[in-house]
Image 1 (cartoon, rainbow, N blue to C red):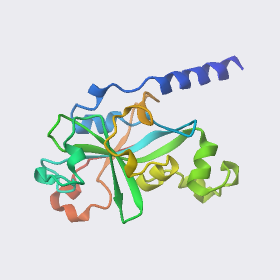
Image 2: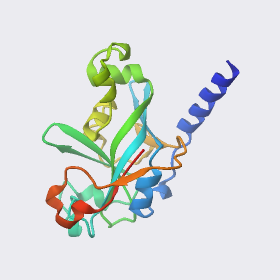
Image 3: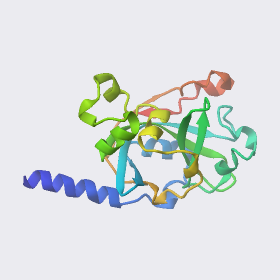
Amino acid sequence: MKADTTATANTCRKFMTKLKPDFYTRDTLTVAKELLGKYIVRELDGHRLSVMITETEAYIGSVDKACHAYNYKRTPRTSTLFNKGGCSYVYLIYGMYNCLNVVTEAEGEPCAVLIRGGEPIMDIEYMSNIRYGKAYHELTKYQLNNFCNGPGKLCKALAIDKSLNALPLDRPPLYITEGKKIHSFNTGKRINIDYAEEAADFPWRFYI
């Protein structure tokens, strides 16, 4: 019982320790790697939903044809990418799936990290009802395996949509905190960007 209490206290402490703004203003590839194991926290209707980040992808607009703001292309959609690192960039794909990104680097440099996947950590029952409309113990093996292992799935589980675009990530309703220490991770090509020519081969996907 004492061990369980200590573990719970440590987890709560990590939820309270929000990442500081200067965490995000660094090199995008560094931020993408160091976000692994961190906790995304979404406060909603008195609940504190959270997932541990398990997969990220880096996007660097100055050189990356897969980035929405490649070659510094500024539009109403991409304007958020030009903000100082430390805010959210939420966009819709295929007209139905939201994707959460973390803006990085200095103001004026269009860079971000896509949060591609996560593992449910806290208030899982409430997330289950948001994600599937039923209790966690009622989920099939397929549903459990696909709870938030993709950017659209993660956003659905955390009730993240475009209303949360351009918000600072160090305060409610959406923020990122310290989490699990990650000692090793995998690197590979990013997914579903075949159109990006040479950038499709950049090894800017990181996962545990």
